[in-house]
Image 1: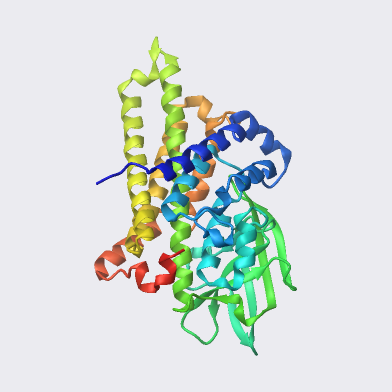
Image 2: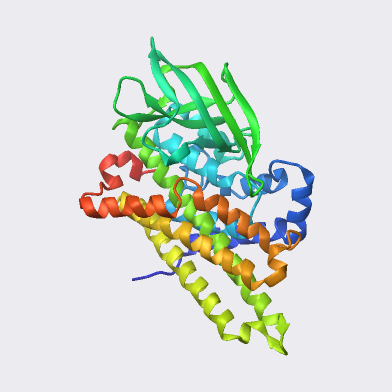
Length: 384
């Protein structure tokens, strides 16, 4: 098999790495954290000018083309840099909107060029993704939505939000497009442990037009499932970047930190802990890249996604805990950069399924022996 990146993929990685290196060194991140700003507007502008906010979107809507694997490569670099921008959520929400058809091309184009921030609200308390707490009922030609969503990333900054909701009277859930200026929508700022700005969304009998329920001509639940799958793989790519950079920094630190007259990296226990971290990172890499590549081929199923998300959750947990431990007292110092990787990894670990829920889902798919491929949803999905 050929695992090397092609020239276009290498160009995306190198461009992203250069931009993030120029804007996300430790001192710049420290200053940003103290600024009180929700995201780095200058970095967002540079990413948009470089075309990176349009990766995975067709050129007809201002994107640069490419697919899920290139999106994963980009998000891996963003994760390694801990880039304080809404890149992951905007990219995936825009790709989902593009999949839903041309009716929303205007909003997709704004997101592709960095003029709009998008996000999605699909998390559920108790990991009940198949039974959203938000309820949608028919109201003439439109919809009425009632309920709440919590911990929505970039929920205060987004121009529009994709929300999952159960459909009253139907045994399915769907994905709705909720503009941020919708009458009756109340948003309240929240903060995550990794300082990502979050929001509580409260909807009480909020009216939306009939076309707010998104589909791709094959079924509302299928598009929601497709969106969750892409978001999970995107989270895996972010976690891969976070964990690999944390491990890289730990290797550098243990090679220089001298104790008992020699670098602690020369001690067997330290070497074994770091080696375990390396194995975890490579497991994360292989499962994430495999799921992303299979998505582009229209062959990815729920088991592939669950396997990638499991390794992102458990691997990210173990690697960043090891990184803090091997830094000794410095690992507990919140003024030292390594703590940022721990907090970022914890946020990704639980988002849209931690290790145990994903392991249970993976076991169920294997036991059933009938995981449904994404290609069964329809050819339009493969073309995004």
